[in-house]
Figure 1: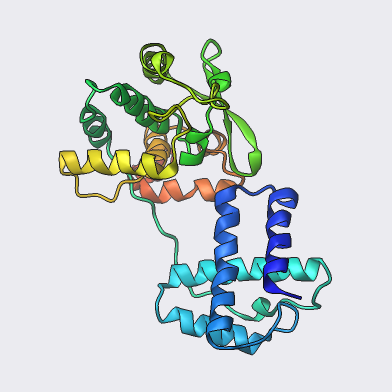
Figure 2 (figure 1 turned 180 degrees about the horizontal axis):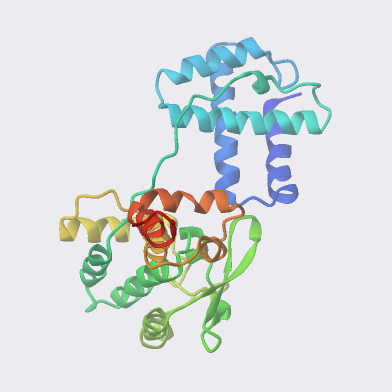
Amino acid sequence: MKWQNVLKDYQLYLKIERGLSKNSIDNYTLDVEKLMVYLNTNNINLSPINISLETIQDFIYNVAKHINARSQSRLISGLRSFFNYLVFEDYRPDNPLELIESPKTGRKLPDILSEKEIDSIIKAIDLSKPQGERNRAILETLYGCGLRVSELLNLKISDLFFDEGFIKVTGKGDKQRFVPIVDLTKKYINIYINEVRNHAPIKTGFEDTLFLNRRGRQLTRAMIFTIIKQLVLKIGLKKNVSPHTFRHSFATHLLQNKADLRSIQLMLGHESITTTEIYVHLDKSHLTQVIEQFHPRKS
């Protein structure tokens, strides 16, 4: 059994059976490809069926010299998933990764922006250029609706239900949810649609895609990152800001303003409330207020 053949089958399994996004599939694929490169480099002729625990341990030990604990944990998790698939398909009787422990990484708290910092970034957009109105609408949507960058890129005009006050978002695993949208975000999206997008050449197949590049096609993830990085540099902000930072800020600011975790979970599209609970760790003042308001010995 050849690695490339099994890897193609695994990719189909991740797409069809598990409904993962292209980005997730690419990440899982990369984990397996790293192992394949190691085997080829060291002239180790072992198939996915007969590769041993010892060989995988040697591979992880070799890789661990060059990556941090969090990356090691991610790699082990990806390989464990691959060998679980082989067990599931009866290609092999066991998963060698079950006996390999991931390094302790702790829980990484996401970076967030203050409301003032978000305002400064958005105000730095040059609105004299057509893409300025688009970029403002993009950042207002990321922050105003708490979207992942992939969700923003895939947003359609037909997903906008402004009269009802919602947008339809397609998240991980093609799961759909309705997210409330505030009037300010609706205002800037409408300006972009009516004053910029309506006058742009749109390529066939992208007629319903909301945010377009100058060639009338869907924007890329890299372009969104670039837009944000340039604005952050422009205002001299010394923070590592990405599209996901706006999503984290959205959730944290809601929590600070007394929104409940369950509502935030639904808006973010988190499958588990445990994922949403990370924002509690960011806002210690919220916890202090809860104690002062509700504990019987508060005074």
